[in-house]
Amino acid sequence: MTPLLDVQNLSKNYGQRIGCKDVSFDLYPGEVMGIVGESGSGKSTLLNCLAGHLEPDHGKVLFDTKTDGLKDTVTMSEPERRMLGRTDWAFVHQHARDGLRMGVSAGGNVGERLMAVGARHYGNIRAQAADWLGRVEIREDRIDDRPTAFSGGMQQRLQIARNLVTGPRLVFMDEPTGGLDVSVQARLLDMIRELVRDLELSAIIVTHDLAVVRLLADRLMVMKDGHVVETGLTDQVLDDPQHSYSQLLVSSVLQV
Amino acid sequence: MITVKNATKSFVLHNQGGAVIPVMANGNLTVNPGECVGLTGASGAGKSTLMRMIYGNYLTQSGEIRVGDLNVAQAEPREILQMRKHTLGYVSQFLRVVPRVPTLNVVAEPLLQLGTPRDAAMERASELLSLLRIPERLWDLSPLTFSGGEQQRVNIARGFAYDYPALLLDEPTASLDGRNRETVLGLIETAKARGTAIVGIFHDEAARKQVCTREIDVIEFAPKAAA
Image 1: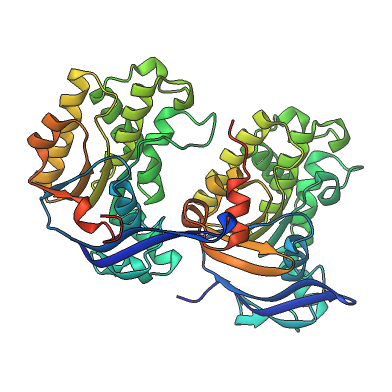
Image 2: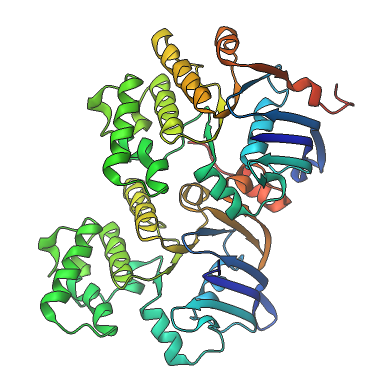
């Protein structure tokens, strides 16, 4: 089986400071990987390099494209990479505002991504948008409301609908449940899990919440100061951490 | 089905001056299909540790742990995930689920993961929940609101939803009343008859005597210095 994503020695510096250094891993279809670490450990830098939002200094990000098989997304042309971003990839931002158009209706937000890949029939676009709003539990009569009229949790669900409508194979998520209250968070977690299972998505989830990765991720990567200090099965890393930093991280979680 | 050969395990506590705690040296165990092997030994002797090493959430330092064809001690994460999906079930002492997910879905989850059609998975889940006497009015609620015994029965239902070729049972009868205890022991007998290889921890001695074909005291695997 070919991996969906094969990352080799990825490094990114900000001047003298290390963003992330020598990160290598692979991800297979249907797998969910969590990246944890404290603020400033390079999690988001890594995610942005993977998703093509930042240009890495070294390394390769090979993605199994539908047409040409494994292809390095770092060296591919900008139009090609943008096409991936609209079709096979999705990026869920921590703040829904960064991933939505706040001045456009909910239906328009979902429909825009469809139009970007060539859909033109208004009726079909609206029907698909309505279908996806339903899947993320947004009532259909809110389809013409703008996201500014939505609560934080609804905005986040709308962002997920907008991202998944084009049937991506790989979803990048940056703290998808950060900043939401816990009851909304639980519902969102359940929804993400079902979507991942039913659509056989692969996902890379950056978070600092160990409870979130325990429930969502199959595999876990622990980062510290730009380096990956430990990788493994999620429950193995959480139950039997090997590196001193992972041990500190796991033992610092508050019990509820 | 399950073979453990010369397995060793120690914990290194980096944040407590690098203290090394050896917990197992020379772990050896063979479980054939249709057998139920009971692990015995005092609390802290390493029963659960051995079980977690087999399940892959504890790393094994050296030696070999085979479940079917897979050497868990050296397997890639994705191989272990496949094993957990298809081969090895685990009923732990504690239920860990996404909050607010209905009990019925929690129990059906392992089947849905395997691509079982939703109706069939839900039907099997209902069957097990009825068998384990979870009242139907609770099926739409999250098991996190349940009592300890109910949670444990949900956990057992989930573990038995799919007929795994191998099963790990950590105290499956601990907080159950008489009738439910009998039901669970019945489920274990049925699994054995089907040819499932089972490793179990039972503090309930009568239960152990009833379902286990053999017993192994894990003190045999304790590191020499500590023994």
